[in-house]
Amino acid sequence: MGKWDVVCLTLLVLNLCFGARGEPQVPCYFIFGDSLVDNGNNNQLQSLARADYLPYGIDFPDGPSGRFSNGKTTVDVIAELLGFDDYIPPYSTATGRDVLKGVNFASAAAGIREETGQQLGGRITFSGQVRNYQNLVSQVVNILGNEDTAANYLSKCIFSIGLGSNDYLNNYFMPLYYNTADRYTPEQYSDVLIQQYTEQLQALYNYGARKFVLIGVGAIGCSPNELAQNSQDGKTCVARIDSANQIFNNKLKGLVDQFNSNSDAKFIYVNAYGIFQDIINSPAAYGFKVTNTGCCGVGRNNGQITCLPYQTPCQNRDEYVFWDAFHPTEAANAIIARRSYSARSPSDAYPIDIRRLAQL
Image 1 (spheres, helix red, strand yellow):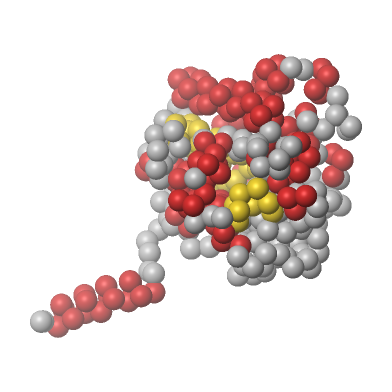
Image 2 (cartoon, rainbow, N blue to C red):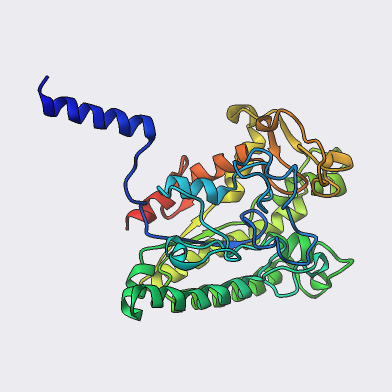
């Protein structure tokens, strides 16, 4: 073996051992959403929707961060799969050149509608998140030198948007606080949501976004909270909620076709509902044993409220689909993220998955 062969072999071993990797597949990753992906934006708000205390983050390297999970969220795992060597920072703390790799604008309790989640206190609505992004674009322009360079840069980035859950859980199906169910049928309500959603997507497009990932609403009728309140046996998912979500999801998927036909942007739809149903229906295939109860929480199914401060959670967290009354464990998030990034079934992502979107 020659000298250069030894050098090459040494470098290969170092790369394998220390995980050296090249540039990320896209220059930046922008995230819009609710508590499923919030990573700290609500920490400074006067809100009941906060997760900056143990046991949240019990399995996360930095401890409690504001993530509504025991560990990573789906977008944390997707960022890893895209090749980023660190997590995308929350808007509340992102500064300087950090913003060039992307920012997480998500806010727990946020919805498409302005009033959604207001009974929980402070939150940054979808329109508020979009305004924060618009403000950030001016920083990107200043850093990169001019608008054309910034526009070219942003056109290569991935924009992930996942909202709608709270418009059902913390609005339409909460008649004590909201009258939307009296005013709209599920069909009409989905139309109203899609119209407002479209306006915000257009605003993002106008400010440089070109690669969009629209994440459908998950099977929220199967959450421990809904099972505790509305399921007789505590196991059967609540059909009226899931059917309303499916009406919305089908229209969201239709929006992908609409934008792809009428613009130079590339839109994809991630079928979070279908992926989640697969996990719920075949838990053993994914290593899960408990699908209907939160790892921590209070009351029936541990589903009455989210984890209490310093409550002791279950020990076998990787065997639980749900971490608390509403949110998946890191183990479930990782499966959803991997199938969103690289579709295992043709129905996981439409018309392509995130991995292929990144390559365009």
